Image (tube, rainbow, N blue to C red; front, side):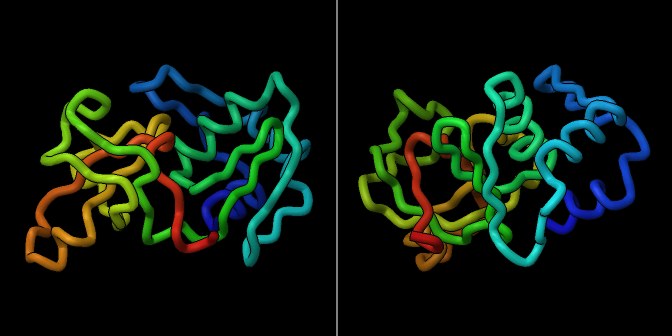
Length: 158
């Protein structure tokens, strides 16, 4: 959460704009949001806060797309994890129908590891770049693929 904490403390120098998702937050709007939701942010622990309905989508985009944070959403409550999980578990089969750009089918309860998004191909609004733990153990370490949030859960924090 260091990057968010720094932006809140020092203020943004320019607008946040993500062209790929047509997402924009002005410096003024960020100041309003940070004063509204992040006054008591502590970067050494997970941060949980209530969000108003009108700000929910914007807050999710800001935290996932711009900051690439792992967040848990429960109705209008968001929890930002201080550390991004390293391991995930498949909760719903990942196949070629629901994920057309995967190297193989990932079965239920398969362990996945966080991977780098080297070519910026991951849409952080929908999922995160992962690779199978089994493949890494077998020496296949040169790929990652986007797995959608609806198909995974963390193993690090449960």
